[in-house]
Length: 204
Image 1 (cartoon, rainbow, N blue to C red):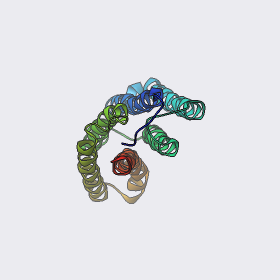
Image 2: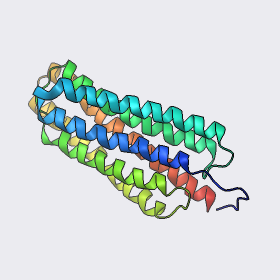
Image 3: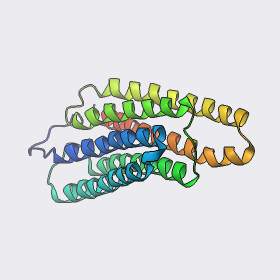
């Protein structure tokens, strides 16, 4: 990493880690909503609060970037990382809203599998955000996120195959929006790791 004369303010990394933490919290609410439809109103509000909090944190990230003299990573990279973290939270909220709006029943186990992948990705990302200043362990993070991203793609394919085999076309259309949003959330987190990989290469 290039030598820096001035001390770095790592507050921005804490904010990015908090954004990733909101994704983890959103997964918790979504798991509850999918498993217990009767709790949908309260859990949906919890998810909306997570998404709002993520957006507020993103605003705080950008404010910090503009007002801090020296930060651990380039400012444009911070913007991209924040964008994809916020996108992940937005997509998880969209899963819940589509599920409720279409009056869907409890989804098959593929949804639970996908949530498991996403929460693992968000937990790894939270730790990675805090390590951006030192780059410690980020190679392993990138590799594990690549593996999890491929797993999310496979689960998506099996989920869609299951829907096509077991539901009428109109039901498939209603459920496909949920399935697609699941994958979009995983892909957003995958984009975070892709950006981290680019930062590691640039700073090496």
